Structure formats: structure tokens, C-alpha cells
Amino acid sequence: MDWKSLQGKDDWKPFYIMAAECMKIHHKRGLPCYKWGDPGLPPQDLFAIPNSMEGALGYMDTQQLMKVGNYDNDTPQARWVCEHHGLDYAFVKMHTQPCGMVVKNHFDVNGSLLKSNPVPFGTMEVVKVLHFLSDWQLGQVIMLGHEAVTNWKSGDSLTFPWYMEHATANANSVEERHMLFISGVKRGTHSSS
View 1 (cartoon, helix red, strand yellow):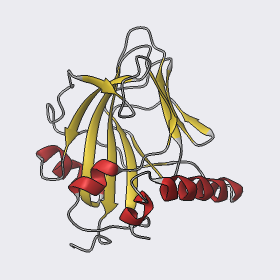
View 2 (view 1 turned 30 degrees about the horizontal axis):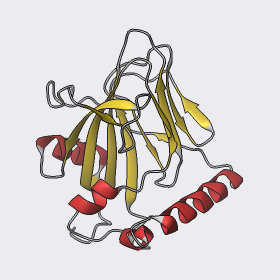
View 3 (view 1 turned 90 degrees about the vertical axis):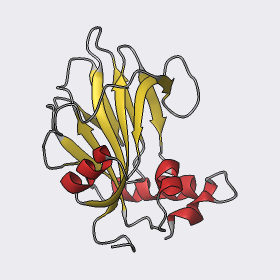
């Protein structure tokens, strides 16, 4: 199914209906909510820690602030991500989650990937990747569906389905959490390949 068709009348209603149904089927089948990927660290200083705070879900909420850096497909950062994770196209966000912040459970409509990618893509081509750039610290957690992820090491990565509801928290009192949040198109499936 073409991703743009899930946009509906600019309210993404078809997306939310389909994502919720896909997640129910996924859980009913007993499938894992995520899979560990290939570990690896990007070249030193490729991803600078962002300074600007923004609302993690696109609006300002004092509990959900995140330091975010965005990298379109034509940047060296996105090229490294594509090479490492086997993608034809990627929209990358460097997320630094400050201490005491949460991102409430939500689905991603992948609007940035849709806007920045010049070639249409479908639901079967979308890849979601988390690539950790700092070691796990007590109080830090990523929630994917009904599973919680902890104990990661810097360089670890995981993938999860586009329809998986997710959330994050950093309840650590000292350490920020650094991670790449990647929306991409699988290598070899993108019609520009």
C-alpha cells in the first residue's frame, strides 16, 4: 500500500486505523515487538549533540522535550545510516533525551520521510531503526508495543515495524540518552534502485 494513501484528508485517519489493526494482528501472532540489528558506531563527531529543544511529538509539552538534530538523505550522516542499515533512503533524527523527560506512547506517521523522499514508497518498504549512541543508564527505557528495552550499549541498534506504538523515558538523574531515530526505505525495494 502506498504510504501517501495513508495520509487521508491530511488527518492521517487511515494510517491510525491501519497501524492499530496491524499491531493487534502482530501481538495476536506472538511476534516480537523489535529485533536487534547490527551493532556499530558512526565515525567520531559525525553526529553532534543537538542544542535546540523541541516538542518530541511536534508540539511543545514541557514533559516531552527533546534535543533534536535532523539529517535528510543527502547528508553524510544519512549516508552512513543507509550504508550501515541497508537502506536506499533515510530520514535521521539525532535524539538527545534530557533527564526527567518522557515521550508518551504514539505511532509515527513518518511525515518527514514522506516529505523528503522524492519517490513513492509503500508500507512493506518502511524500516524503523533505533541506533543507540550512549550506554544504557538506570531509569532509561524504550517501550515498543508491550515490551520494554533496557541494557543497551553504545552502538547497538534495533528495528521495529512501522505500526508499532512506542514511547521513551529518561528517569536517570544525571545522564542524557543519545540515540539515532531512523525512518528509512529498505534497500532494493525503493523504486529508484
